[in-house]
Length: 199
Ligand SMILES: C[S@@+](CC[C@H](N)C(=O)[O-])C[C@H]1O[C@@H](n2cnc3c(N)ncnc32)[C@H](O)[C@@H]1O
Figure 1 (spheres, protein in one colour):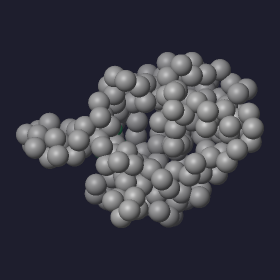
Figure 2 (figure 1 turned 30 degrees about the vertical axis):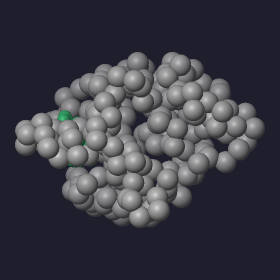
Figure 3 (figure 1 turned 90 degrees about the vertical axis):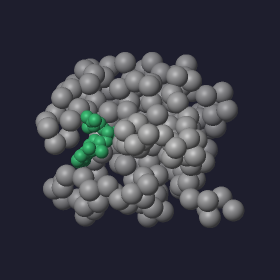
Figure 4 (figure 1 turned 60 degrees about the vertical axis):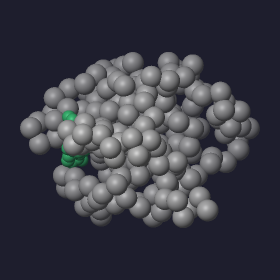
């Protein structure tokens, strides 16, 4: 579920819709948490869908480390990509605000964390040294994303967390370790879903 202080807005014909902050969302806030209304779809199930639904599932879902498609039930599925994203992925089925997000700013992800099936040609962004998102970007950029997440976690206990109740029980202890005892984060490298990695 997406943070409550967000709304869906139409951007333009090229990008379509996106998710925008309606109030100030400070760095370290949980901006998205996976919840039990999100659908977890088996790749074999998606493969057998009719072309129309398959296309939409592939557009609006991401793949987890087990290769399952996660189709969010709410506006989270409209989050766009940026090479300068305002949100950062973690290993704990949640995303954090990577920096302070001001009202009217867009909530964006780096699609490099989403285990894309195909390269994604996005709109160019000034100053970015990447022009496409590649399915294996996690293998290259995980240290940068881990650093951003670690910095965001430092603010975790200082900020309001309206989605805190959605933290999955299996992640509570690890998150407490990071935020209260200074433990290291589990790297997002482990989000990478290729089967050779898990062998
Ligand atoms: C998960 S959807 C996001 C919601 C989408 N904007 C919409 O209105 O349906 C992903 C799609 O959004 C568009 N998109 C997202 N980020 C983009 C970017 N940085 N440049 C170009 N298109 C983008 C592409 O069409 C992509 O396939």
